[in-house]
Length: 178
Image (cartoon, rainbow, N blue to C red; front, side, top):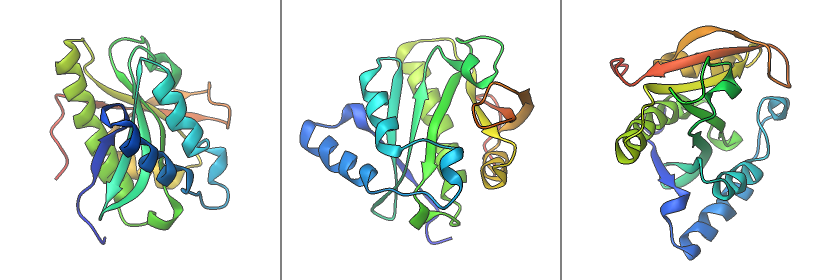
């Protein structure tokens, strides 16, 4: 696997210089051919996360390198086909840089995102009970990574712009995967 841990660096918590360094690393990230239909531009996603108060963007670090990016968003779970906006954090804009794929980092980062969301819920004393996401049915690597991270398929979602999606949920009460 290469590494058995990831660290989520919250972009909001960095000073301007450290944030600029991380944004530069994000701008250098790339996708494998065909993946652009499942995820957006990494830098645009991170900047959108910084611009909107309900979003919390993170850099996924592994082995001392920026290996990916993800955003947790409050009050937007319906965007993944969840029945209400406020009961779950939305995991969005999640990608692992092409140079770091195939090492299990997606699973590790998804697991770390659930823990980060749990800590945000405690910090903000909000009512979310877990994390929800939608993933394209043709994104087999993503589906597999989320399942290994403990996300449970909650059914189809037809609202995605790239075709049929699966809504997946990970409860804070669920035991962490081994």
